[in-house]
Image 1 (cartoon, rainbow, N blue to C red):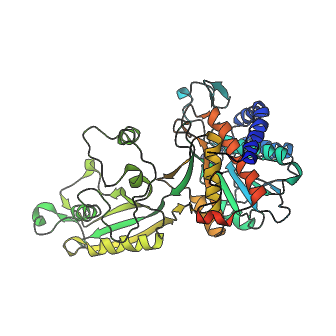
Image 2 (spheres, helix red, strand yellow; image 1 turned 120 degrees about the vertical axis):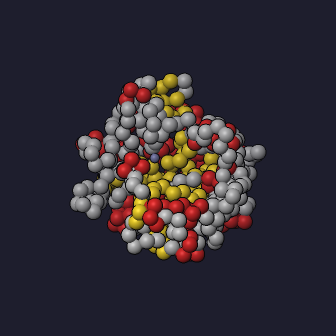
Image 3 (tube, protein in one colour; image 1 turned 90 degrees about the vertical axis):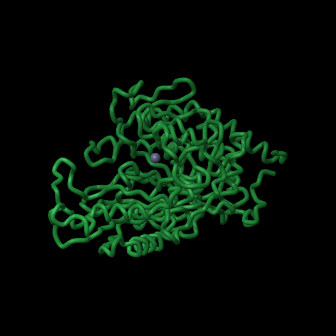
Length: 478
Ligand SMILES: [Zn+2]
């Protein structure tokens, strides 16, 4: 596929530089894994600060002159997690790329479930085990090692602007992310952002994560009586609050289990699909249960809405008395497909429950939180470059995947920088077990991830963001 000699030699030069320093890259990664930097408020703060300092030191060693540990306070006045920011300003009119990862980790959890010590990195059968070995200290090392390889191979011609942004509170829900972005808007401004915190399709097959679902939630209350009454004296001519609420909830899906709320964005466009057996096993679906919805499993997870009732206020069974309940309330959670405006989804939910008020009962709709979905413009020059680089590094074409959940800070990035091209890449694979016991990193894929990113840096440096890629002809692999 690749026949351009200049590109062949670029790939081989970068691969050699990465291979020559891979032992060292792995040693640095093991040192990071040894630092249990956890940003949850109940954990000791000292290791988190140590983790930030160690990450900053790594960037200085890689030749970055401008390296800082920065932070913002939370709303309650306590300090947010320490972020590490390093910059190499662009020269000669070249673009700037921002490389994101996070240096904080999840706690170890139940240590008896681990086969190795969580904070001692151990190599076994081509994988590196330890908390943070994949999520997301490998993301940090991939950025640093890719940068070092590009700087070494390109020498004086390396004028690309590169900003490193290593967050220190991602696993605690990024409480000060938005404040931090607002306070450092210019410092972090870039043309392309690479978020290395996702997963590849499987070991040996790279992926670009091109969509994330958004979310709206809220409560639905059904009111039918002014006060509770005896279910024998009054039951029959009027239905109780819980029954009416259940009838209303039942209107939210059609007979096939598709979301029945009108006006929501849904698409059946996922490029790859998940085998049904895998989904059933991963979600622990009991034998005999029919799956809901139509279309591919991947589209039901990534590009269609999903609506769940996640709580109901009702008397507990053990204290239930023979009364007609005057009211009942439920909390809903609606996942949004890419392209859906959360405000429109919230309005559609309100309209649906008000129009379907059972037996003329009063329905009170209270909106809750909302978050935007995300999708990469896959025709953008940056996405084309990333797909090319992933395929070149792995030697097999990259696939575009979605994620059914949300990464809320990505919505913050798109709101803050509407014109930036965001690429979500990753070092994980389906067996990485991020957040669980025995988290691990596949070392072959890790090496490929470094090469893919080094290729992106080099071609972005050499050719800039090519406009013609928008027509589908750039970076397609010469
Ligand atoms: Zn992560």
